[in-house]
Amino acid sequence: LGGEEGDSVAALVVHGGIPSEGGLAGLFSVADRDGMTEVVQKKQKFAESSDQGTESQARRSQRRRLLEELVWSDPDRDLFNEDISPNELRKAGNNYGLGAVRNFLQKEGLRTLVRSHEAIRSGLEWVDCGGGTEMYTVFSSSNYPDKRGENQAAALRFRPKG
Image 1: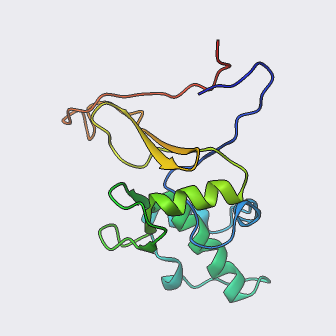
Image 2: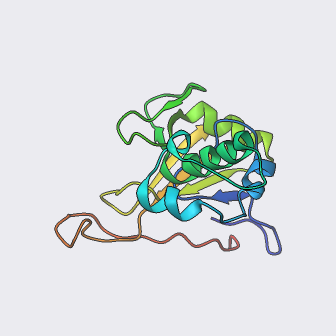
């Protein structure tokens, strides 16, 4: 990925996908790590947890849902619609159409979503989301899982065009 020398990269890099509500302002509010380990390691649904502390239950649930979506969500590459729905296969996060990716990126002034949550046979997949936006899935573990798989690993480097 690149641009002209000195250009900044207009990309969001996450593990899973885009949030169902809000935008980048909501992403930054997740920076407080309280309760994150539980969501990431155990895939525990935000609604099933019992949060305590000074922050309201509703606010903590909202933050946990956002984190779950960023970590466990998956795109539906066959849908160019704007739908975002619960991910029934993983029982965590959402499935989202490519139109939802396009709308999120355009709303936030971004061009590229980079994610890594799914094993890709070649290690790297590029998808045109329309409207000058794109999504990469980059999987950095070869032979996944446990050296039994047949996928290659990949890395994505941002650099100037030239």
